[in-house]
Image (cartoon, rainbow, N blue to C red; front, top):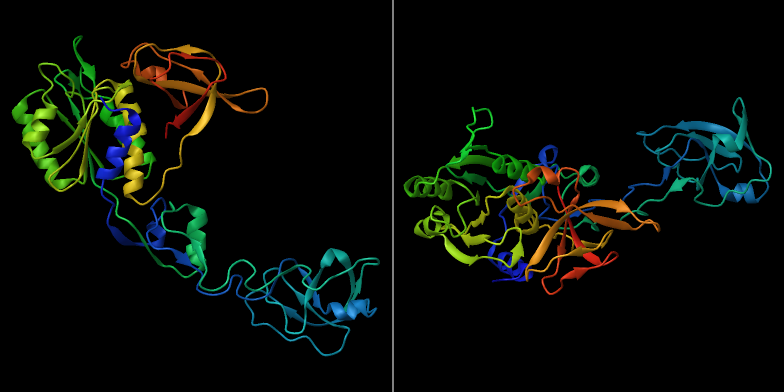
Amino acid sequence: MLTPTEAEKLIREAVLPAEPEDCPIDEAQGRVLRSAIRADRDLPPFDRATMDGYALRTAAVEAGVVRFRIEAVQAAGQPPRSLGEAPEACVEIMTGAPLPAGADCVVPYEEASRDDATVTLAAGKAFASGYAVHRRGSDHRAGATIIPVGKRLTGREIAVAASCGCAVLQVSRRPAIAVVATGDELVAVAATVAAHQIRRSNDYALRAALIQSDFPGVDRFHVGDVPQKVGDLLQRILGSHDAVLLTGGVSMGRFDYIPAELERQGVRKIFHGVAQRPGKPLWFGLGPRGQPVFALPGNPVSAYTCLHRYVLPAFARAAGAIPPPPRRVALAAAFTFRPRLARFLPVALGEGPQGEHRATPVPGNTSGDFASLVGTDGFVELAAEQEEFPAGHLVPFWPWV
């Protein structure tokens, strides 16, 4: 079987990039940028005051002038005024207002005293050229790239885009995703449940995590263990959705029809099985339109873990975002795992004596013990080549969304 790294590589090579589309700026939150945002003019576009005070010439201060005469008021949003030619001339100015022509510094209110139209500078204060002034172009010059391609847009990036006049942004198109829970034992959440049945949870969990990861176009489905019904549903969603996630029916049991039905519907298998626990029966392929199809194990912990280890990073890359590599954390307690499989171990993060992140193992009962994930922060990946993992051992950490 494949290692997790090999499986990840095959997925990365197979999943196609999403198409770009135009998006109004007020709908762009969470989208991935596909065309860089550049400054359409110098930022800031003019020399501007960073404090309320008085705009004047530092040359006058250096020449010994301490009393200045207010000639005008410069408010934000007004065209810049000009400072008179007299050395003692100054202009009262508000924060954000353009610096008057001829002035090169701003003396804040609290560093001067005022008597009617006369301003006296505080004794012993020095005011260099540029004091309390935000210089034109000091942030970015016109044409400079401010937000690169591949950035997921938050309020910070939206603010920059707005300041650059980008009313419409080019972003990655969000996929329409089908999440299918399979199994005759599953019933709806609100239904009366018999002793031999269980309520559906995988499709709810996967949909919530996808939406949290800025993939909101998720439709949920359920199908029982009947090949004809499985095939009919697959045919329908493969024609209407850009990605398909199935849970259950993917192992080696008599009623595990998913792999055969996927191939019958024209889905090309890339791999089936990864040397990992949980999630060993993971299946991945490409649909008739090239869309990714993931068949995840039905046990809830397996499905949720595989979603975070493989599916969400694949969707992020397809959108043009580059997921950061997993950070490494130290195990807070020793752990032993003897099977020659990679182990995805749920952990709770805490802080060590030096302020470092430490991961406390929370192994749970079985891969069906979904409730054990409550209170955990993610999982660490333990290498298959090792059996004993001492406290302090550094391991890669994958957070839950």
